[in-house]
Every structure is written in C-alpha cells, then in structure tokens.
Amino acid sequence: MEKYWEDVKNTEEIDRGLYIILPLRYQGDFQQIPFSAKKMNTNQKDQSDEEKDHSGFDSDDFLEILSIKCRSGEFVKRCMLEEKAATVQKKWKEAVKISFSYDLTQLQIFSFNNGIAFLTVYLAYKNKDVQEIYQLINPGYIDDKKQEIQDSLLAILEQEVFESWHKEYDVQLKWFGQSEKTKIYMMKEAYRLNVAALPKRFEEQKIAEKIAYNEHRLIDVTKEFSDLSEKDVEYASGARDVNDSHYGWACAITSQEIAYVYGPKPGKTVPITAEALPERAEDDLALTMIVMYQKYTCMLLNEKIHERFQGISAQSIRELKKEALEFIAYGTLTPSQVSKWNNVCETYRALQKENGVNEALDEIKEKIENQQMYQNLLNALVDQIEVKKDLPKDKVKEQKEAIINQYESTAEYYQMELGDYLTQYMGMTEDQFKEKAQTVAENTVRNQMAVELLCEKKNLEPTDKEYEIGLKQYAALAGYRTDQIAEYEEKNGKENIEQSIMQEKAAKYLQKSCVQVEQEDETTNENAKDTQNSTTENKDQNTDQSSDESSDQSSTDNAQE
Image (cartoon, rainbow, N blue to C red; front, side, top):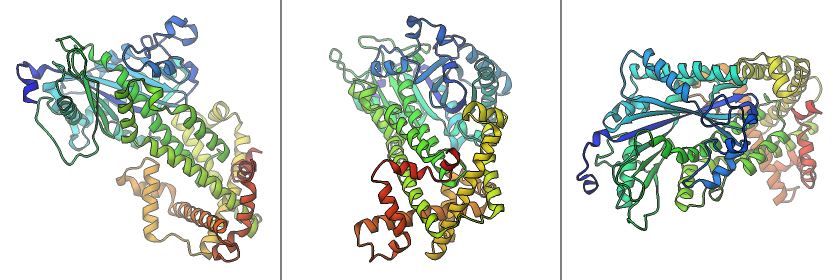
C-alpha cells in the first residue's frame, strides 16, 4: 500500500461514487416503457434500428454478449433520467436544512419484462468526504438528521419519477416491499455499487484488492485497514496488461454491495475524471443489475409459492410452475452468456453466490415439486376421508374474504380500483373473480379440514416452539423485520399461522409416507396405511402428464375449469 501511494498527491480529491440500487415493482405495459438511454420521452416504436442500438447496452468493454441480449428491448429496458436527476438534486438540497458534500448526478431505471425494475441513484463525492456517505448509508450509524435526508430523497423520487411515469406511460412504479412501513428500510437494505477513480494502475493484484476493500467499507482508500472477521468478501480483477505489466481494475464483492476501483487506461497516466467515472462503471452496473433481477425474481416467486400454499392466491400450481420454469430457462443467465472474458465471468459468479441466486433457484424448483406432490396426496386424502359436504360457512366466508382482500391490497398498492385491476391484469370481471374466489375458498377449507383431521390423528399439531419458528419464517418471507413480528401476527391471526404450520407438517408427513411406500412393502408400513390410497393414486398420476391435471383439481384450478 505504501509503495502504491508514494508520490501521489491530493489523495483527498480522489473521485468516488456510490450507486444506490433500489428495487421496484411495476404494473403496466412493458412495451410502453421508454427504451432510450438518453431520452426519456422517446418511444421505442418510433425509433430506427440505428437509434435502438444506442439504447445504453452497447458495450465497447467486456459485456458484448450480454449487451446483445439487452439490446433487443424484449428483456430489459434502461432509461437515463437526466432532467429528473437535476430536478431531484435541486429539490433534495432545498428540502434538507443541513448541508451535505455529495451530489446526485445520475438517475436510471432498469425495467425487466416480469414486473421488476430498479432505480439507481448515483452520488458523486471526493475521498475526503467518504465519512458523509458512510453515515448516510450504513445501517448502524444513521442518526435522525441522516434519516431525514433519506426520507426526503425517497419522497422526492416518488413525486418526480413515480408520478411522471404513471402520467406519461401509464406505468405504476412502487417500492418492492408492498407496505408503507417497509419503505423506511429501503435505503438501509438497498444493494450498493461503489466506484473510485485511482491515480495509478496496480503493480500487484493484492494492492488493487486492498483498495477495493476500503471502497467496500466506505473508508479512505489510502488507509491501511483489514478486518479478519469479515469472511464473506470475494475478489475479482482484470488481467495484467501484457505491455505495462499492470492491473487496471479490481472489485470486492459481498451480499450487500460490490466495490470497484479503476486505474487509468493502459498507457495512460491521468485517472478517470469525475464526469467519466459513471460511464466507466456502466458495464459493471449492468452486470450487477442482471444478478439483482435474478435475486428479486426469486423473492417474488417465493412470495407466490407461499401465497399459493396458504390458499390465498388465484394462481394454479400449473401456472406457477410454468412461470418458474420459464424464468429458469430464459430469465437466468450463465457466465458464458454474460461475457467472453474469464475475469468478468468470475465477478458474475461471485455476485450470484454472495446474493444466493443459485440456492434460491434450487429452492424454488424443490418447493414447486413438493407443493405439486403434496396437492396430489392431499386431493386423494380429501377423497378418502370424505369432507366435501357441509363445509362450515363461516370458515369459507373468512377464506373468501382473505382472497379478495389480497387482491384489493394489490390493486390499492398500485392505486387502482379492484375492478380495473382485475380487468387489466387478470382478464375477468369482479363477478367472475368473486365466483372463482368462492370455489377457491371452499376447496381451501376442505383441504384444511383434511389436514386438521390428519394432524389430530398423528399428533402433528405445532408445538409452541414450532409456532415461534414458523411465525418468524413467515414474517421474514412477507418482508417484516424482527421488530415487526408481533405486527405480522396480529395482521394474519394466530389461527391462520397455525394452520399454515400444520399444512407444512402434513405435507412433510404425506411426502415421507409416499417415499416409504415406494421403498418398502405397502402392508408393513404403519404410515402408509393412512395414505395408501393417496399414494397409489399419486403414483398412477405421475406415470403420465395427468399429474398436472390432478393438481388442477385443487383449490385454485377447479375455479378455472
């Protein structure tokens, strides 16, 4: 470190920047979203092929392969909000009564074709002012004044960006968390991309990595600093230049952020300027966006699976499975689809790993398979114990109201009437929806009664400890923090949460019984006696394509057919 910094003057004036990556959801026509990187009001339909090639995904660096996929405008659109950035900066400075030493110089929106988007806020600052950034963004060091700065920024972004997109493009932008209360955590939990323009190229890879680590920790890049307790940091760097034997860049990757340090280009002695720094980071930002898209799509799919399991979703297992498989097949990208350069592929792999993308994909596939198997077994169990008649009207009514409330909340979230939401996004009238909700509710209650009888017979009711564990898991899945668990419990009701836990226990019991029957003599296994008929039916169903059709006789699909 000392050798690198010798003869370097004015280290306080080193240009640095921070991208705050805020996840969004949107409702609206993807085709109406602006595609141009430079002009917000340009409609893609009116663009020539030449204009489309300047969409912001033309790479002259190392993401040529990825840029081809992005350039079509069918997967993701990138919109630079140049005028809005200046307006937001001005209003932000006016709204906050204390001064701060960083400037908001760039806003972008990356919109993907599945209803997920990201708003990136770029803050430019000098190395000497890094403490200001640290206090603004570090969750453990936010005081009331800094919280005021955060809240003000989010409010102005809603006013200037969200409202204008709704007005101009009929696209509703919302924060990813579907609650006003989750908004206060947006800045703290946002993914971050740190960048810095270093004065010299790097003789040793380790030097570049140390500086990138400082960038990640939001401290002076010249500081000699290490933290042996932080074990989840991975590094990647550019290849050593053949002519000058130096490295040009390096990055430090964690689950919360990625930090890049850039030296001058080969043969150059002048560092990147403050104005050019965001341009240098464009490819790295695009790479990060792809991983964030995969991460948040997995989160969205997990939400849908959980809602489907609870019986409050109008989406069938077959539809959910199709959506997940399409994402896995066409929405995810392998390293070879991203870049031809090994160091970029390694960066991408590390981003995926630290953000748990591959694990989440495996979890989704397993959950859908288990849910389909469980529904097949549960259908057979319902038939076996005959609980189809005389359903308790109060429970059916309660379940129907829960389904309707879910969709009303979604419509309200996007500032729409339920009828308009159903017509535009589900292709049905309110009467058709309520009829469907009635059928779904009846089948859900029927399934619940079967589960309750099974749990009673096999002593599967949740213990106090199991309830506490389940409560925490469900609250976390719904986006509630640890200090909001009581709020989640009150909103959803203890009885409903217990029912969900019982469903999970029943599912594990039935699936375990099914496996045992396949492995052992059907007549010797006690557990198989309760599920023998369902196992036989399930095995018959799984011999051909009728398994999906059987699942579609479940709570949701009956309503569709």
